[in-house]
Image (cartoon, rainbow, N blue to C red; front, top):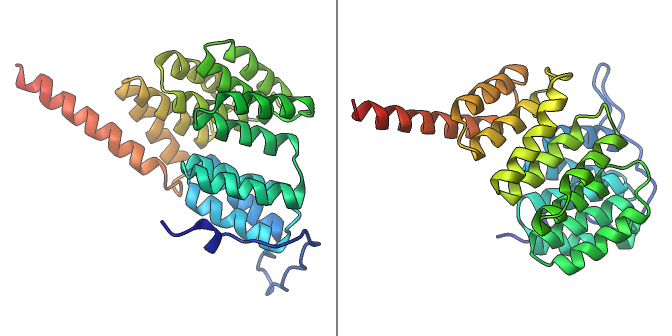
Length: 261
């Protein structure tokens, strides 16, 4: 694998955001916020590589953007490139410091590497300065899933930080899916479905629900949710692979039970 440091943007010290290049008439200015917005869209659609690239572009314009650094590290964690994520975390804290969200994603990284003692330490530090951010509580919930403690309470706390925001629900689903146990997946489904009741037009929630259903073997429900996601967001590239899984499973069971007739 090509070392990520060759591809990601890096600066030795934080600098003020570079002025955006003048745009032609009618063209959107591509400043750091432009790339952050693009990155966040990709991130919550599970399009990790495009998200990583866009977060990197944001950091190249504004090296002091904590969100750009957080996004790069979180993408690397979701790509299971844990060594790279840890190296990048070290660089990030040199430039933007250890905020609550960076500590939270570091806790998730440690937990997914089965280093639970360090995960709890990072999580404790994150929660001390959590403020209104949901991520420290999501990280704690993921750790508690492994420890078979009250993860649900942690996830409820995360959602109460931003009650109308669907994005914490997607992150909770990811934590539950990574854990993989049926009880965890069912818990993730609870949080996604409750938000879908009021935000049914959010494609990312349907994608999360489809993946949760797939993990539980509920293939018809998975297919329906994934189809809905693809209708609501036709440009969402990640949904195709899960739809393919759904179709393959439906085809397998159709052949299996058809053969028994």
